[in-house]
Amino acid sequence: MGYDIDQPYGPLIETTMRVATWNVWSRYGPWRERERAILDVLKAAAADLVVLNEAWESYDDTQAERLKLALGLPHHAFLGSPEDGSEDGGMSGILIMSRWALSRVGRQRLGDQEGWDSGLAVYARADGPRGPVHVFGIGLGWKLGHSAQRQGQVRDLGAYVRKAADTSAPVVLCGDFNAGPDSDEIRMLTGRTAVSAPGLVFYDAWELAGDGTPGHTWANTNPWARPVLFPDRRIDYVFSAWPRAGGAGHPVRCRLLGTEPVDGVFASDHYGVLADLRY
Image 1 (cartoon, rainbow, N blue to C red):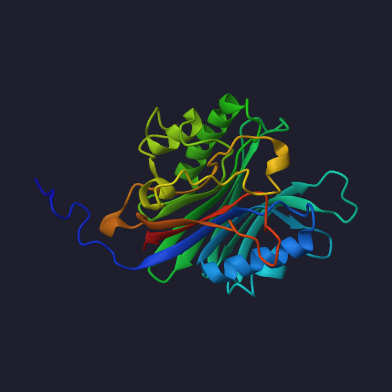
Image 2 (cartoon, rainbow, N blue to C red):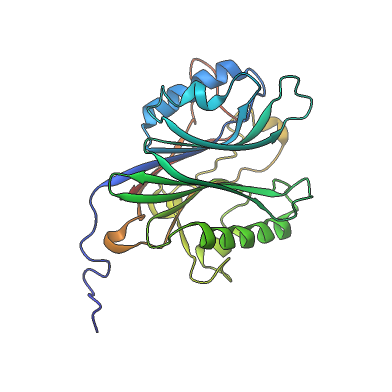
């Protein structure tokens, strides 16, 4: 009887936080030139939270240290695995960078932990000025024929979100899911089929607040992607949990990043995603 048909979440929050996610392709190709382009694009984006897939570390250098201060994102969490053939201790993994302090971090392998196409989640609680934000950086298995494996990874992800996060606050999943919006694994997250965990449903920021185009993040317009001969697909996402009081977490704007070259160089083989969420 207390439901307000005009304001079911109460008065809507007018302020927003900005979240970016991007697979930055580790140290492949002319990576130093690409990294300069990545930095230029992310500076212009001015995000509060950034999730990078295929970020890198080595014995004496890290992508986090090379980027985070220039972006005004001094806090970070990273988990990676060894790069094949690396001679400098190279690791490739998921990096979360934050404008706000991180009071809690966690990591969870997803799916078959012995398998070579398993998934990974890196978690951080960002203590922002208007309350906590629970951020999960996600990488799912990449093989085109591995939908069943990714569905198992999404179920593990749902259990981990339930365990790690206070779902009364904004919960954001960002990363490279390697699956299109019509796939069963993504439909599990958006409530279009059996969900990954009870009551856990996410909004796809591009679907709600993009520009109405397909929003492909793996696209043959990108010269780094074209040689792989994969179809154009939207596989990188910002997901936010069903809105909380005031509509917290609800996407209001979303666009792609890195779709144009910087000084003649495309920054990555993926395009990134930038979303503004009520906060």
